[in-house]
Length: 218
Ligand SMILES: Cc1cc2nc3c(=O)[nH]c(=O)nc-3n(C[C@H](O)[C@H](O)[C@H](O)COP(=O)(O)O)c2cc1C
Image (cartoon, rainbow, N blue to C red):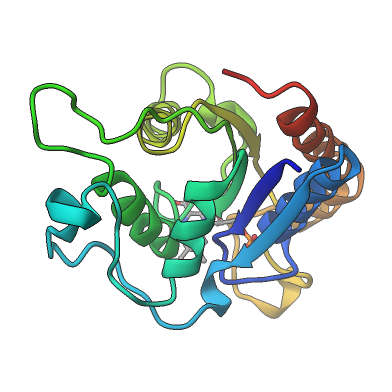
């Protein structure tokens, strides 16, 4: 049985990121996979790397063994055939929760040796979903978000395996913009996009989840 781990790294468990992660998870399930979904912000407390270096020696080499809320996620990723990760863009980066997870998952795999550089070959395919206020176009070649996205895909490919992106920009951030004193956003446009484009992105997430199982990328 193909095992897929799906991680929602938004603190909100019913909004844009969580929705797309669950759509991708459903796609993977429809292709016959067993899917385990984690909402990172619902886990027991956790932190990023504690610099204990247990992953660099002895029997625990190559494994993050610091026990906290992330332990079941790190263990599940190690056993997975495919991984779905969804995060909101927070301040031009992934969410802090995902940053903690990436520190732990990436650092455990670094040998600190010239050869080999990694404890294990990172070959588990990853679907990487990012949602944001910025439009999708901001992630295309050239700008800061494009570079940020490429650097995240590169880190993930070293830590877990080859990563494919799905970016969903200009998301609906709140259900009622009139409750806030914001003048940066066109609420009507956001609502329109949520009702017309977001459903297509949900379909795409589901299709990519299916592909992760039926035709995994290398
Ligand atoms: C703390 C915080 C920081 C954010 N920073 C950015 C940002 O730098 N760029 C951006 O495009 N959107 C930013 N956003 C907007 C979110 O990325 C966007 O609303 C996202 O779709 C939220 O995901 P969710 O609905 O799954 O929670 C930020 C939102 C929050 C709460």
